[in-house]
Image (cartoon, rainbow, N blue to C red; front, side, top):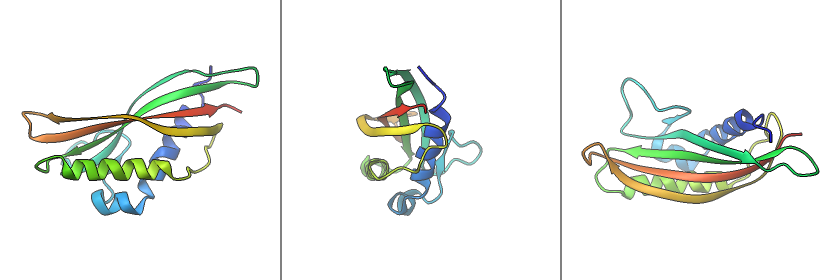
Length: 136
């Protein structure tokens, strides 16, 4: 197994999300590599947890990365959160930038979980994606 591509994958995902015009129309520049501190935006996107497992074979080292992208909003109802989540999914369905290390073989949507958070004042959607990478 190689975990060496993890950082490069995260950078490419972040770059793809921050470059997406449709997502920017909904959240502006409020896309974070870690949950924001201080004054928290009303609606934002944050990269979240990741689980990686070995996917090496006879041709070389590789891994499957399940990673989460989270949408948080204080807007009433789930409509805005779902619109932002759809934009995240659409952005990650587009071609990704080249990784600084290794190769992205494929990236796909796995699941989403929508829930209320914090005495039901916030709406949260956790989107999980799976990426297959090879470390060349």
